Length: 413
Image (cartoon, rainbow, N blue to C red; front, side, top):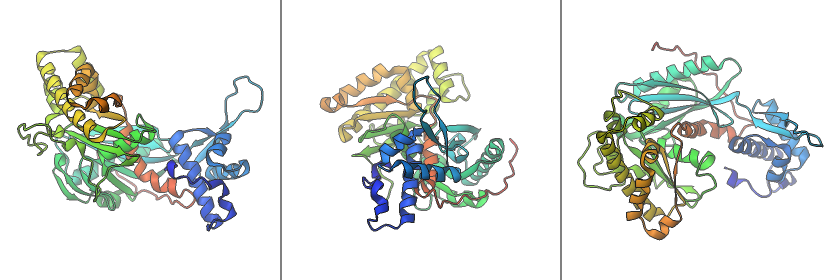
């Protein structure tokens, strides 16, 4: 991460116990990570940010270009005097496939090294997909995306966001209640199928990572993150600049905070929690829609108000407010970020949400917190998933080896 760039990076070639190749690899990683996190930067900015001299920056950029990881071009002249600056950009000919698995759909996106979504495919599933079904659908969607991207694209790997507990060292899905998965070897099975490196993590953790590194949580040290899925709520937290993960990496599932003695909803298995009391399908059922993405659902509810819809919104907003106020009291964050379906609830009744939060949150903690809703159409969860396969590339761009994916046969729709 950028925070770990040593202050003596510009003096690395003087020795300090490192050989020259190690220093060169470290500097390549530093430059490429800056470009990935911040986008196009001029050579002069790279010089200022790294304390490396201009000649070294020129050599490093040339090497990244030769590796196909960066491009450079002069800025468009604004008519002023002087030579135009050279802008260096991460190359979007390098992509990662990002996967999000939900109870009713699987989405796969191609994310460029710039951190921007290039294309997206989504397939609805009639029920929570079994592991084997998920593997086949992901393989099929990756095949379609790869075909559309054309020749010249190199694939860093695949990152998968799952609504459940994931053992990070090997991608074993220990428990995903909404999907009815236990000890699921999704990473291993998918990697064997497509011959690309596969990385898996909890979806809320990845959404939080994307917001912290690219989005509304950038530069904040204390953040609470909540995301509404098709069924239930997930969450995570940044505390003192570091993700809250716990002893075994399963900590910080804030969607399971209990706020009520409410009845058990079989889908979640966690009575009275945010994940139990806030269900997207409940609002969808209150409309005449059989299916809808988040922007469509939001527009419909705004255009077709009804007493039934209002009752659902009010109950879920009140439950969300109770959860947020408890988390504010626990963490004293700078911001609470709402994503996914929770952004819809915020858009529909932000005033009531804030009012109900103020009834339970400690006043001095509430004074310092911002409630931020991610745009309903945001794809940052997928961007967070793409960070998993991009990580090894960013850490060692000079020696990273791209695999040739297996020739995939797309199944029919």
